[in-house]
Amino acid sequence: MATTSQTHLKNEQEQIASRRMNRRAFLADSVKTAASAYVGVAGASLMARGADPFELKLLRREPDTGRPVVFQQSIQPAKTAIVVIDMWDCHWCKTYTARVANLVPRMNQTLEAARKLGITIVFAPSDVVGFYQDYPQRKAMQAIPPKAEPATRDFPLPPDTLGQDGCECGPSQPCKTKPFGSWRRQHPDLRIADGDLIGDGNNARELLNFCQERGVDTLIYVGVASNMCVRQRAFGMINMKRHGYRTIFISDLVEAITANGLDPAKKTPDWNFTPAKGSALSRAYNERYLAASCESRHLIAAAGLSAADRRTSIVFVIVDQEYKSDETLPAFAKTFLTPDYRCTFLLPRGGKGPGCIDIPGLEALYDADLLVMSMRRCALPVAQMDFLERYIRCGKPIVNTRINIVPFQLDPKSRQDGYVIWPAFDQEVLGCHYQGYNAESRKTGSDVWVLPEASQHPIVQGLENAKWHSPIWLYRQNPLAPSVTVLMRGQWSPDQEPGVQPVAWTHTYEGGRVFYTALGHWDDFRNEKFNRLLLNGIKWVMG
Ligand SMILES: [Zn+2]
Image (cartoon, rainbow, N blue to C red; front, side):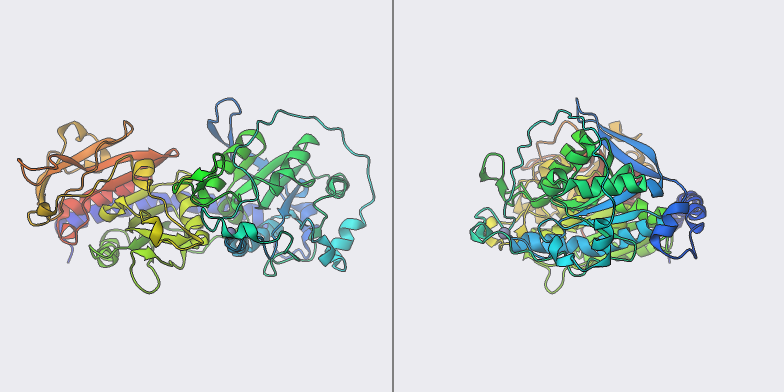
């Protein structure tokens, strides 16, 4: 039985979720109306003729400041093509091969949505286009009559310090000794459909002829690498922007190739330089100088192909050896979040770590509205970490409970090639410096209290001036970044180190809301004040 307070919280939750669902249903219906016009029309190229425009949410950055600007762009499917760059079956780096393969299922889903919207797909497998010489899609591209080359206009492009042609296995770059040119074709699981085209990514005239023939003025890019071929091939964003085309890329369907545990600009060890950090830096550069970005989920939604379950999606990632959050968080969700939210719980295969582990299902983050993390000292394979870091590094909301002060802080000696650690997650994402705890405090627990100066904050709504005893031992977490807003503090002994410490706070990372609480012991979940704090935190980070 829920307590009165729990019931009250749940009612509030239902009202908010219901309002949110109504808004989503309205938006979904408006894109369905646009998409339904093409149902029953056979053939992608036929659909392109009659396809109606739709609105797409885009993000660009001001060239002078790098400041992000979100805007809506009307996309006319008949005048738009998706260009798929170099999705090869194989790379010189085995980790990068896995990373590229990782993009394929979502890319297939997105290309299917684009076809349904009436957008033409152009595959551009540079170097290996010969593999496709007998494909009708290749012959159709070659059959387009030549046109006059359009005028070009150059634009300033500052140097990029990310480096190129790296290995992402680890800082010793074991793959760097392997030969180049082992690729034969596109990834075999990447679906090529009737009505698609296959071009030679090294011959710009093919794409320019196609664009003039079809009246295409907008090119949307997916593929690899976002700091190399997606930019620099003859079919790439730089050359096509020079020729006057509108360039866009799908930010969750491209990857850079940079380094792992190594600063590629300085060529010095840096465990906080992850492959996904390379992709994030490349993304920001591209948004600033070359193209606006969009997300695959918005194209999929515009085509009416989103999951039937339209509830707000919360993904919990739990790797917890100490506090039973694999039991407490699902129980919390059952009481306070379902049925209004779609909750997905992702746990490691096999043991619970710490160390190199494997978490299936992280692709759920493509469509997540909130990530709740309770992880301790993990290294994940690069391809899996991409899902997590892509979500985190593009400023989406995150709730972190107790142990998630050190989710990826693992001794590099315990890391295997092809795995990623991120030791400074606490400093970068949470805005604190984790420095252990006093073992004596494990015996006493701690008094924790809401700060009077925080009483107006929505996360402590209903908890104004609250003080209670928690079974947690206090972490040393100072100094905090100036951008942190502390909501609660705690102390285990008035006389002994570490003294008063922050216990709950908010931060922003890449513009997104972050909530952390050092509470989260299994006995904390028996306390309705803690449950209220966590529920308020979940609601607040989602805005
Ligand atoms: Zn490698």
